[in-house]
Amino acid sequence: MDPEAADDVVLTELYRAYRSPLLSFVLRLTAGDRQLAEDVVQETMVRAWQHVGQLDRAQSSLMPWLATVARRIVIDDQRRKQARPAETGEGMLEKASVTDGTDTLLRNIVVTEALQALSPAHRQVLNETILRDRTVNEAAEILGIPAGTVKSRVYYALRALRVVLDERGVSA
Image 1 (tube, helix red, strand yellow):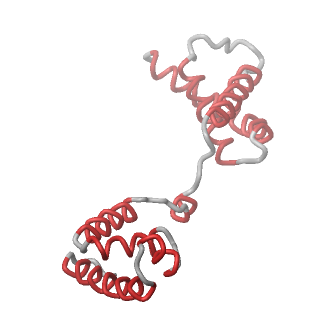
Image 2 (cartoon, rainbow, N blue to C red):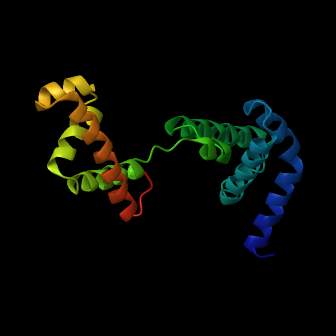
């Protein structure tokens, strides 16, 4: 029998003899997580296969060696999980709000360009009343014009702004 076939036979014997007790042991280490426990048992058996030539099969039991390997695998897995941020499921990612400022930025650029297309008097009155959030009387005092003129200019400036935005394909 070739050495590889002999190694496979040894591994099959190890799996039959130690799978159940090793799984019970690992289930306690993984707090009952059966899927993780089975993964750990499989990884333990892979490592046993990788070191089959070094195993002392003359011992009455290889369970202490297998248990040590399994315990180290569980510890390494826990350390790996602690070393990186917590994982989230797909549901969490779908619900996560993404603040993308692209739309706001584009809207600001379009409005700024549209304001540049207005007359200086209309731009001034919108700047004072809407952008700086001043009352009609405050804007009139700052601009040095009557309050009625401010109201009239705001009305016509907003109409002109709507026309400019409509021409650019932006709904106001």
